[in-house]
Amino acid sequence: MSTPLPILSSKLAQACSLRRPVIRAGLTNTKRACSRRPFLTSLWATTSRARASPEPASSSSPAPPASSSRPPQTQSQTSRQTPPSPPPTSRSNENVVTPTPDHQHDSPAKHIAVSIDGDPRTFDTVFLRDSCSCTQCMDPHSKQKLFQTADIPEDIEAECKAVVHQGKHMVEIQWKNDVKGYASDHRTRHSIDWLRRASNTELLLRGGVRHDERVLWNRDIITRNNKWIDYADWMGQDQVLFDALSHLNKYGILFLKNVPDSEESVVDIAGRIGILEETFYGRTWDVRSKKKAENIAYTPQFLGLHMDLLYTSNPPHLQLLHSLRARTSGGESFFSDSFHAARLLQQKSAFHFRTLCTFPVTYHYHHPTHHYHYTRPTIELYPYPKYSEPTNLAIHHVNWSPPFQGPFEARIGGEHQTTLRNYLSAAHAFEKLISAEENLFEYRLNEGECVIFDNRRVLHARKAFDATQGERWLKGTYVADDVFYSKLRVLEERYTGQWLADGVVRPATE
Ligand SMILES: [Zn+2]
Image: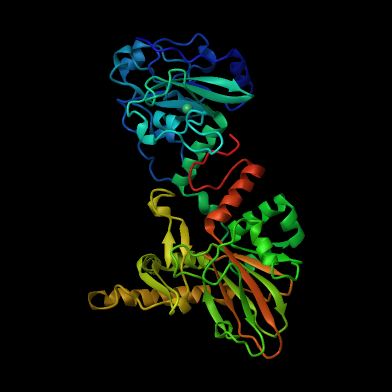
């Protein structure tokens, strides 16, 4: 029994012959070649007899996944049928497989190959079915999924053709054995653009290059690259906001100027990103020292390099500090890129680096009315295999907040005495790097200026100041990581057509 052929419109064929990417959509179990074969009917197939798509080997430059998921091409397959016209590259040529009729019942198609920008990209039918966004599969208003991944038959099979819909090149998939309850007229359409992005995202995640956009800095680098944004532009122009947030994501620090002298200004600034993160310090909080300061928490003393709220399970991502009064001498702020220090440490001593990745440090805020407590290693890497290869893990977070450290809870003695000593030695080395003069960026915020920094990356500190001379008053607030990345993805998608999601996210506009 043969299945229908992928039919490709001549209009599309013409379009494809004129421009890259050439779209080739095909699937297995087709018995005869398509009459329009010269253009678009190359059939790439992976049958169930082929091994499951393996993860490609670790590589610094990601290769298209298709190269590692090619089905074995047997002599019988090639001799019994004329292979369809080859894709444009010789490499793609290897991918052409046409299953014989004998294989049709016991070798259902589980992959569909689509040529994107001249490269064959292989997609699992489960992925293609699972990501169907038709109105039967996804509520058009809430965007919520209307079936479960677990509803998809394990032996789901499909046939596929290329179509053009509203000027967009797409593949249209007809399911042979669809999810239970779906009528036979159910079709899944995926645009080539979306498939390209889905495929590229996987390559990025697998290659671990996603995080390489970050620029690690020392004093000279950040001095040359600091970005100042005018408050009015931040508030009024989305393109400026996008540039600013991209910069913030890259360097972990950003400055605003001409901020109105109001306690609400920091709320307005953060509000452009999204909702503020309220903590037990309040929705906003004051770092203030006046004459006869009533709150001992806000002393004029030196405050060493640290991060805020590491005693919570998900510390705030962004910290905003707006200077309302700067009428004392001293009180300069210091910033240091902990990711840069971590990389330097890794180069100097893999052993110290590894110690900081593993040794558990406890942070706490232990008071009569609040008792927060969390234990984490100093350096956290993205977990394998979601984001990168194990030999090239990206730094996810650094945790360093000496003032809020509690007693160590594990590996504190006995047979672990060496471990604690190793930690001390690594902590010495790390502290030396973060506080080295050439790595410290010093700046004294003037009134009407606001600094925004990544609290999971950039350490902050403050020099002592003379509280008897005048007023020093900063108004601060936090923004959570999800809120920041949400805004960045929205803007990035609008201005560049890409997004930074940690995973394959269908654009809201498709
Ligand atoms: Zn659907």
